[in-house]
Image (tube, rainbow, N blue to C red; front, side):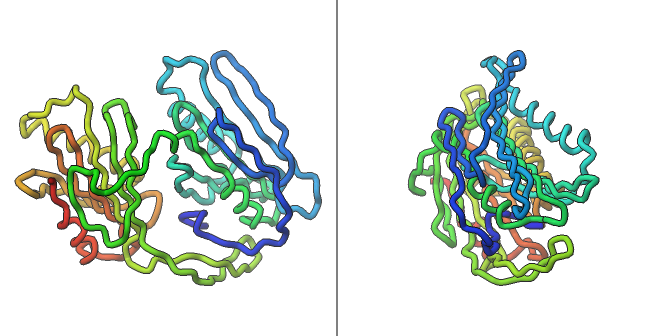
Length: 345
């Protein structure tokens, strides 16, 4: 289907007003086709909030819409969300007699969301979205009717589903706030996140996507041909990104070359794991008298090739990233210019 579902536009057949819910304490907002039924269940230390809309209308393409939030009442269980997400994914993929058709990842309010396109034994498609933030797990599910693949109502529900449980910890800042300099080819959005992970005091991320242009393409959904509007990048790079993070005081400011290399290797492993990808190439590099590591990763979530440069100085880790589209050379000039423009102030 689509690598990034939010970049696809399908013509609407019915622009009726949907029912919007917004629950601040759960950090969500969404629009349902009809007023959803809300329930809360407590099982031991685990609480589950459900918002479900079962559609009885014969002409509507989908059977139901569901949003579910899981959390623990035990504040000391810091690993709850990650474990619960894995449990729910395993149950859905291996315990429900469903066939996996496609998998995509995209952000929702700063939270990475994984979308699984599944098919049951009756030939009905089920879209299952899942992600977690601040020890809460969020799932969203659409059950399509038979012979109904991805449709406008699916898109409308997915686009309306927003998680703001994470974004409140982020403050927008200027690029000048970084302790390094770099030349982005397009104006970046720059955010500072306090305590993003246990071993980090803060992280700053500058992100610049390549502009896109609208094109009409013809696709097949099941046995039905549809013309949809998609947005294609104007360049061979999907986006440029720079991350600067201050590590916790458990990391010494002065460290041996061996310790520094071990720490950089930790971030190499993290980048490869996050992209669900395959490490293609790794080499040592140098910039401003600093030793660093450059890696090339083939993403497992998209068709992109990811280029990373990583440097460590005084407990600060700098990670430069360029996402190349399929088939683009790793020495693509725009990517090289971006990487070489990086300097620590």
